[in-house]
Image 1 (cartoon, rainbow, N blue to C red):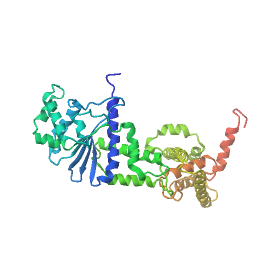
Image 2: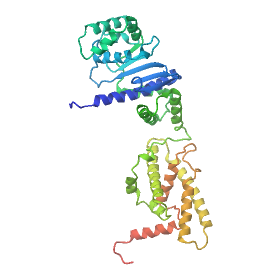
Image 3: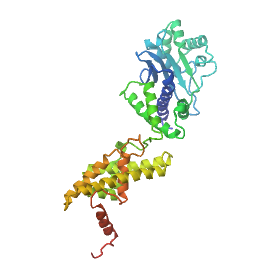
Length: 403
């Protein structure tokens, strides 16, 4: 294995981020007046509205099969204690709960084993740590042990009274299941996986903001609102958008894939700007991808999709006929292109037809109209049928044939 293998560190950071969501889910009910921080005072922290620190968590993840060192002389233990010893806020009599979350097991009869939430023996833990601080000759832990011995017996005892060792904690592979259980009845039946995917996607965005210091904390009330909003998307009159945001797509690749489609040619007859055409192509791609996701995920039935498209077509045909009625007799090509552009914009911006009443992502209706136009039965230009026939004939003629 390479000396530069950083997989363990990467897993540790991911573990910290994922465990933070578990903390938030659990704390949303039990700590409604507190906020969660990430990589601020410690790996994870809880504090009150006034900024008073209530609990700090240090997380230690070890790969499956690897043993973490929680012996009385280990550098891991003494490094953690040093972090807490160095901050006056953590040493106060009514200071925060100090938790160590680790996938390893504290050795039998070690100081850490006596600091588990159950069957605690703080006196024995204190005795063992005092002994290790005095007798160990490790240069690695020397500074930490010295800091420990500089504290009074009462200060050491007070610190240990607030330490909680949560050993044998679930590894990173099992955190998702813990989050699922903690969310409980908030998860809509039948849509468990996609709902959880949405929760995790939201959380990873928040975690990045926390780590980048674009935000300082997240509270339980905000989390409740997010869960409620995501759950509402699975209601009978709503849907959840699963496709990537428009900013995630490579427009050049999309134009390469769809630029030759019939609906794009139809848009060309209107004289639209290139950016308008590109946005229509993006809407089309997202819409057909979204339809596949909904059908595959049993979020949408084919009959409902058919009814939606019939409603789009009905609106389109009425608007198309109105456009023809407004065209003056002997309309020029410019008149027709302009009328087609106006129809395109009018339908594009129309909110009257949605796949479901409370589904408001308008890209889907816009893209679905492009899909309909791609079939050649409907268009925006007053002469779209004649124009389609002309290109169909051109394609059908053998190369080099006399005209």
